[in-house]
Length: 368
Image (tube, rainbow, N blue to C red):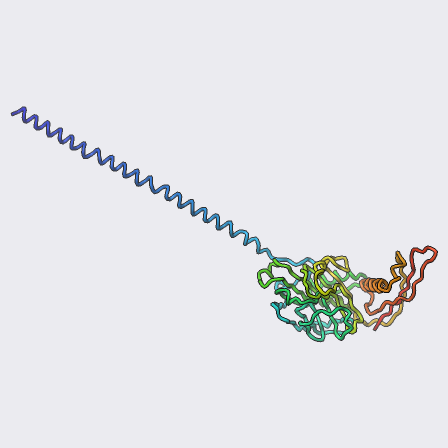
């Protein structure tokens, strides 16, 4: 009996021990496996998602940068006087119409003996005084007509693209100071002091997009005329920037009633050569032309001029004579002479002994 009882106790202990091991060991293995599964799997998924987001952000930033770089503002050549809305100009936007602005002068402007109190700023690069001419095609100068013309670049601008023309007049400030300095540089010994300046500017681009116009990112035609007066003198400056070629007729210069005085900077039945205007000048400043358009109060005079030429053949042909006379006249005007005169060839005296040069006498007649 005792042996049987001991055996039962031993069996119970062994069974309990075995049961205890069976209940504790397997759960530990299961927990460990569960922990490894829950911690190892999500990590690669999160990393891949983060990397993809960074790549998208980098790509978007790279494509935006070039667009910002193209917004650099266009600037006019330094020979231009201030213009546009930033300078306080009155502006007219042009989109294929035939427009003009009638501008009253705060100070009358004398143009070859005629006093004008206003001007018509036409969309086609022309200033007129008696009537607007926004639809007129360029006339070859001299016209021998009944109008005074100031034509920095008279052409069909409204058919080229879109653009603006603007204007402003000044009676004080830095613009007058600049005008005085420049006129005294081109026409010395006058002690000139500007009291009034009128600036008109045309800026057109071959496009229908306003953004392209603002950035000048297409072929453009940009030019300016400056009227300057003071102390009985009147001057004109014409400034040229980029001028894209056009197949329309182009006239640049000025003309007067009956063409008693005129000057042609450029005329052609097409504007294929106007890109070179920014390199031309009569005052040694590329892109600028300056003219004295005096008040016409001088009395009639006849004076003589003697000139030596390198070859007598220079004046043997009539067309050469006229060309030489016009060049001499323009040089005299640039140096301050009245532009109210005609130049006629009186005679040609040849030095027969040297037979290398001639002595020519010209007759200069000042017209009132």
